[in-house]
Image 1 (cartoon, rainbow, N blue to C red):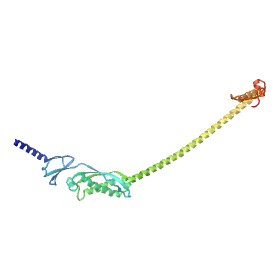
Image 2 (cartoon, helix red, strand yellow; image 1 turned 180 degrees about the horizontal axis):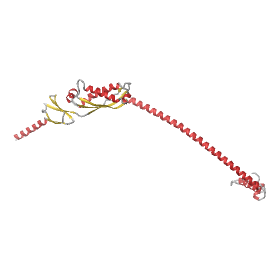
Image 3 (cartoon, rainbow, N blue to C red; image 1 turned 90 degrees about the vertical axis):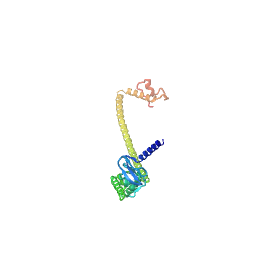
Image 4 (spheres, rainbow, N blue to C red; image 1 turned 30 degrees about the horizontal axis):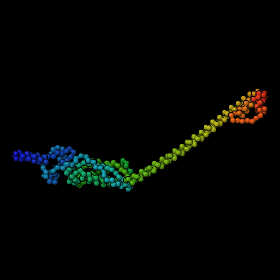
Length: 298
């Protein structure tokens, strides 16, 4: 029984020892084998690999993919005309030589990102100091990004290479600092209000002009219509008077009778009218049927 236990425990120890000598490198990583704190080997190809068991050898992994470093410093920078601007940028970079990277930068990706952020920040500050805001917003922005990339590459490939490669440098936003932005917005708002008020004033003046012209044309049309109506009415009255005169000239008694009827019509046109007249007066002669009677004037 003791012999079986000894064999089982020995197998377990052997398996544990064997497993500590095996490690797998992923296709997205570098495998760095350390021997007593020194870099012994760098595995660049994915697969199963062997090493000595700890503490003789240990393995660490470093990302070999394309990495992105985004700007995190909101501090403004000064342009050539001393304008304070805030920029957002990013850098695409990767680790190409794990040995140099570990010796000169650090043991993980964050160490390289921190140092690369500092170098990029200084390069952006230097290049922006040489340019105006117009340059940052125009097609010359490409020139600025190319110059920053060149300076960053010079820094990482200097006397102590970092073992990294910078693929691209891009600016995503250029803006004034908040205080200047608020001032610009206020000026824009005031300018838009001024234009709006000017347009409203111009529209009101044009509206008054149109209304005045319409009123004038209305008065002219009404006056012309009244003039034409009076002219037509006068012509009709003249023709009627001519016809009456001709008719009355042919039969004076009829004319006298017609005038009497018109006088009666004008005298008794309302129910509440009250007249105190002698019935034997000349006014009622036509009613009494007396020939040749003519009513007296009212």
